[in-house]
Length: 143
Image (spheres, one colour):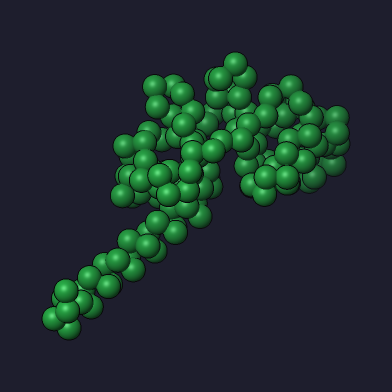
């Protein structure tokens, strides 16, 4: 299964914020959309990603103010991305080794989606269910 197949099921909707807004404003947007991370985009260019983890570690634990700190001050700017043609194993390996939960999907430098660890796990479970059903049918002689 490829990233493109995951996006075909989950959709390609992408939420983003500007690097110049406050962390508080970004958190409100994330809360409104019920997401754990949001892309930071300026002039259609991916500048970074802001996650709940960034907030917890760089604002809350350091006793900073989310209403005074700007997104670009705490976002992860070295964003790891994938292509639509990348497969699930590659995505899982990236997420595991880099300890990240979200992968923006780029095609020709254009953001076309984002996948999360939850999307990857769900896809793997779905594939395993299909395999089990196929093997069960094969063993029982049903087609």
